[in-house]
Image (tube, rainbow, N blue to C red; front, top):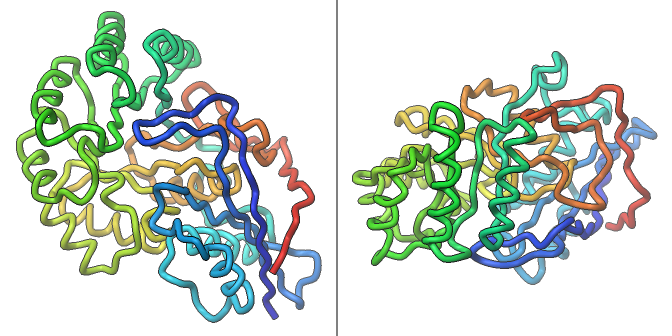
Length: 346
């Protein structure tokens, strides 16, 4: 017989994490644990990575819904991305003997590193410039800059200073505007950004403006990737309708926000059918969630560099074998998972 429990866990950032939407010093997440009475001592772990203020699951009775699911985890999961993501991970972990293995993949079994971009959080110009330098010194070949939080001219100046030293053939620059551009300024800003060999820009305008986004994807001198546009639980028909109407160059998949792994697979299927590129991005998960996404991505063998986290954001992250090697995420088999005592409840 399956039993499930959950607990809240407050992750504390090592720095003030700033986007164009908010400033964060901590992020609340939820862990779930599955056990089988026929297999004593074995428990599968997952992370219901709720993202307050962004996730479609951010509702007042979230914890009550989580409790209800735990009462009968075999009954089926609600159409809530974070809960599906957590339980899909926990079920897979339990099936694989609670080894934190989610699926067969070369990252875990063969030591094949996953190349990721170096994320540059927002800050004032000196802070962002310093962060850029640190990432380059660590060996990252692709940088992703969050923009929209300081003056656009200052952001352009930072990008120019990077390009003055590193050409597009040496360093790839991705941008994430988090929907901070408006219909009045987006065309001008994209044109100015295009001078610096930008690979792509995520969500230049806020989600929900499908006609505007469609026109941007048709005419922008910088390739556009949908991010927040994908948040929420959509069926196959809704997924198809969104992508075939907007027709972006790329989509960014955060399984905890876009329907869990099963729905993320459908996003990929639809994107590839329509010649739309994709890569995965973590949504500030702990190492529990990051490990699951990394394995899922590795099994896909996607040639694009991923936007996964580094596991270094939090001072109280779950200790794990995940580590950074230059600009690569690796799994160190000489390290152990260290799951702390947690206040599990049903």
